[in-house]
Image (tube, rainbow, N blue to C red; front, side):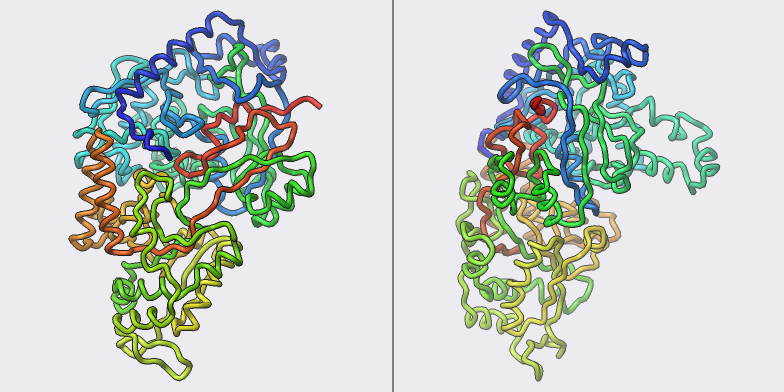
Length: 637
């Protein structure tokens, strides 16, 4: 992610204001709609197109050419816990969105925004006349409903998400009129606009008040009795069953009720995880148009075919069952294109900093393992104990050895964190194990802890390709006397164990390569996804949490530095603070890595148009959503 990302909001607003003014050109054109909707308008089932669009629709410029209406976009979705594919394709409509090139943010649901000089107040102007997918008006009242009745409601939201807090206090939201809202923070929050463009930034605009009020006692005195009549223990249980768990779009429960109105280009017609294929249909009230005034999306439906594994997704692509996709199939792109002459590829600029990160649970429930895992000597020994070059030659010949550190392309690249303890040296590894108190062995050659028990633990991952690499790493560890067992787990079980802190160690990907400041989960325990120290992260997020443990002073200093980083709007100071955080991370060596991932490829059918040739690849970017999938189209044959 370029350094331009961390521009001040004042500079961004100037560009956004010009963008908003240009959108008024929509008044000079005659609006058009998909032929699929013509009969519904003629029959009175839908209002005319001019009554379905906001006064100032958002104009989306196609990547290559104006499109034609119709067709189905086919993709492969894993049968278990793959709702991220929905977020990345049909579920990304925040107030501000990333530019397709990932160089900054632009208005999206918001028509425009501005901030005060010290970046504590962010004022958003909405689009008058904008509607939810059921045709009801979307206004500032919906955002206020989210703030007052969801975010501030302890019966639904136990903890305010960290990205909505600054200066030790949660955001305050007020409305000036039906189309103007202000987000107030207790301290300068220079990162707010960038956090708002991430996937979770859809939260403030995901709660249709007209649809959800009836489930809350504040608006419906019978909410509790209504819930009990339907077999629920409480109104809260009913609300969560209807809408999903509030707080983050990154939760499978948020995708199981297709009746909840949305602002997305396509709306689900079935239940995530049950229908096969899962179909999303065009939203007749979608609020974006192309430069000629035709309502988007171009494509009528999106189809998510359930598959059991990534190899099955690749096979589906080879059989012609995928039109455009990068998730799950990138390892088989060359083979797919060699097999299918009607397909080509696009490049994914990799943002991950590692192909495989390895993190011990420093907050393990077992005192003996916790003590061993927290001994830096043991972690350094493990890092020297496996041959990265040999593993790279076997699995990804174009990669480079790399620890869990920002990518070399990042302005936050930290050479010490990236390159320390990276050489393969079994004798040196044994020296570090000895410093950690591991000198004795049992009859089978396994190292013994001071209590006489074997050094034994599991390290878990999800996915066959990741597991194969993990097996290679743990093979080296076992040769040196570590009784480690790699496990390829089902996704649901994997996440449940981490949520409950019932796990030994984790092998995963490497978030934070180009977006280290936004996703620092491998550099300090700041998130539920900081699996190297879940109890320290819980302390940071909610000191009253049952799972929270007070971290050491060094870790607390890191967390304090990150709070300072969030609170400043000065990009130079932000970078300096993040470098100080990385200095501590290098000294502590929480997480080790294997290899720096090279760029990847996605596949696209030759008749599937307006997909950029190059797309950034990151969860924080929600690849490929910021490239505006609503402007993709399928060329008439």
